[in-house]
Every structure is written in structure tokens, then in C-alpha cells.
Length: 193
Image (cartoon, rainbow, N blue to C red; front, side, top):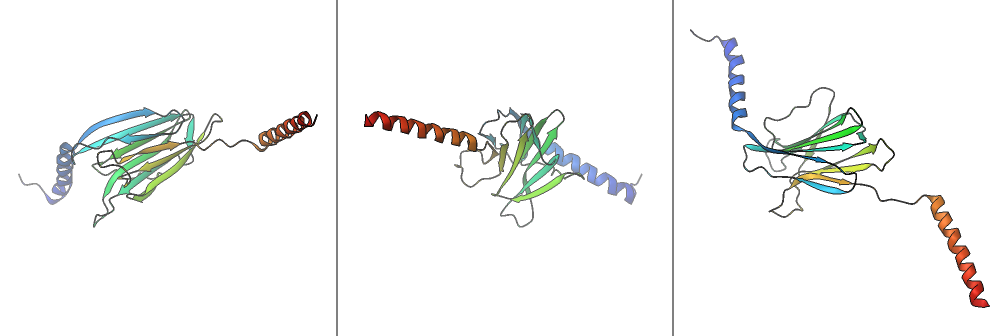
């Protein structure tokens, strides 16, 4: 029995996809819950080119401005556009955010309709901010892929989480200034007498 042209067009991509997927394995997934303070989390490098590593970061009590964003990091020196790493940033119902950063993904993750897709050329970074849902400070996330400023033995992909510096309110500064003026006046009187 011969296979017709139409059936062959359907069957061939399916067979190729199964063969490619069977040759790729996930090396592992690292899960981290962020503490709301500054930290850098590195993604372990895959052991081989047919293996992918994944990092999942969950931050309770925070929300992104966009419900879902897909960040594709492209190889800088490739003659054709090749996605090296991907990161999906999304809001989770219940006032939490999740970042899934995958190094050397295969097959390539395509952006579904409704998700903001951001292309980034390596070694550039992608930075976004999540706002607190309970009155805390915002968190700034900087995603980096194949960063130039890391030692060769260190992982080169990861996420840096930072909080803004705490700046006193103007009324607190005014109260401090008034207290210092009164204290200075009292010390001046004691020294004179």
C-alpha cells in the first residue's frame, strides 16, 4: 500500500518532531521562591547541547504589569536568528508571579496570541519590575543570558532580583533636621555658660 502525498506531508513532520524530541532531555528544573530581597539566582548550564535546564522562580504578593511576557534571547554571533534561552514571565491567580527561565530550549517555544514577545540579543539583559500587592517595595528583575562578565567556570544565565534603596520621606527628614537644630541650640547654651 502506497502512502499518498497528503498523508506523507502530515506524517513526515510528525516523525521528525518525535525524533528530535526524543534526542533532547531536560537536565533538571530548579525551583526557587523569592524572599522579596536582593539576590541573584543562576541557571545551571546544561551538561550537553541536547539537554536543557530550567529555573522556576515564584514570588508571592507581586504582580507584573503585563499578564504574560515571553523573552527570547538570541545568539549574538549566529548567521541566522537562533534562540539560545527563553523566559516566560506571568501573573499567577492569587497574587503571585512566576518566571520560568529555560536554557537551550528545544523545540523553540513560540509565543501564543495574547502574550507579549520580547526579542533580546545576547549578551544584553532584559529588565522588568513587579509591584507588591501588599504595600511592600517593588522588585526589579534583570534576566541575563550568556553574560560576558562572569567567569568561564560559572553559569552565565540567570535572574538578578533587586529592591530599590529605601529613601526617607521628606517629613522624616524635616523632623530629623528640626531635632538636630534643637540639639545644637541646647549644646550651644551649655557651652556658653
